[in-house]
Image (cartoon, rainbow, N blue to C red; front, side, top):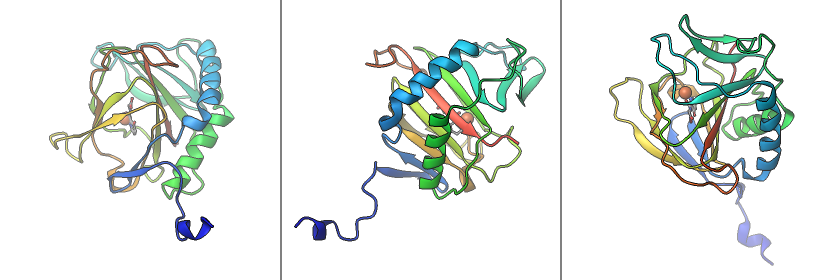
Amino acid sequence: MTADLFEGVTDIGPSCEMMAEGAILLRGFAKPVEDALLAALREIVAQAPFRRMFTPGGHQMSVAMTNCGNLGWVTDRSGYRYDGIDPESGKAWPAMPAPFRELAQRAAEEGGFHGYSPDACLINRYEPGAKMSLHQDKDEKDFAAPIVSVSLGLPAVFMFGGAKRSDKPKRYRMEHGDVVVWGGPSRLFFHGVAPLADGEHAVLGRRRINLTFRRAR
Ligand code: MD6
Ligand code: FE
């Protein structure tokens, strides 16, 4: 007779934390599908290898990147943009695999965003020491759609600031399987990743992989 003990409990899934209005953190949400994600990732990387891109200012990023989906985020001396073609291969980016899309859609649903249809997935690879400076994600056309961010591998400190660059960021430890759904009022908040501490992850070794799904067009 345990049923009445759980009466009224509608959410028995992973813990859900509110980071700001419009931004929720789903701890462990990607864990059940990690094998499918990593198998799909291997195929993407075979077609579109990770590369360290250059900023418009001429600095090489410490984070290595690739993409899947109809569009990919790229940066070079001419600026930041979404492009359907991988500049390294001259071919389209690999298609977004079903396990990627399905996870992003389920997470968005959890955050109250119905009918999420990402057309781009930026894949970031951090090795020890790699970092991402505070930035806004504002190269997308439609800020009504959320960004869904999936952390895999070594833990990282995610810095989540405010609408102004000078707003003091809060720090969140993102672990393997954690998912952030981020839209609404905080969609344009500044954020970044602190230099990755060295370590050894059971599945991914000395790296962190982050998938960010976007509706770019
Ligand atoms: C990262 N993430 O976690 C970098 N941007 O490696 C991002 O820059 C990011 O996680 C927008 C929304 C969610 C994110
Ligand atoms: Fe970002």
